[in-house]
Length: 338
Image (cartoon, rainbow, N blue to C red):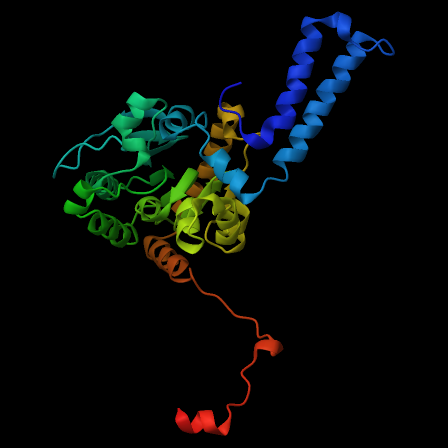
């Protein structure tokens, strides 16, 4: 079967056994009926699936976040929103198809939705630049956010990118400046802003549309300052240590919620969002609507104050003292030498 992950092998083996049994019923065990043996294998498949997907490692969740069948931004726009009208161009340089956005309806609310978009095949990935936006993509997003602010429309952003494009052209057109301006301007928007990490949330490329009143994350998505492979290459000089890096980075939804870097986890079907895109989209819509209703009730000054305080609180930490590591008295000779 295509696009199956390594840790799904036990499930695949059971499914293959079930398919063979149905194709060749004469091979079933003689001690029990054919129907009973089918039921036993089906039950075993469900138990194995539950055991695997309820105990995923951080690296396995990263693999699910990158699954090629996982719903992308335009899939959620189609299933979660209505009356989407895409807008194009940054009015400065070019159209970046790695960043999509436009007018839409979420329930009874008119909104502007913006998100990073990957491709399904080689041709589309080249068109979408593998979901990694250029400076013009972030400037297009900012243009749409300013439009939303002008007309009082809430903003919904959907994040799914390995990071902003790091190529020479992007540097020449000031990718870091484009992201930095977005961070500054998003903190000052008077309209409600909700961000949802639906797959990969990589570095500044994700944060460039991620400054929001509420930040949601799908159960098997991740949000990180660097990819596990990049972290492994820096710390251990070997990208093969990506699984070790993923655990150390604490980039999974549960870790991020514990660290108060996201506000809520949107549950996915057992096996990942790609196993039931409609159910995942319905869950995302429910969470977006609930948070939007809450934020709309806040006066604008309160909304700006809470958004500012939310991001100012990020990065605080406390160290636990360890008596074994406490500083020992400095020898007299060392003190004099110092």
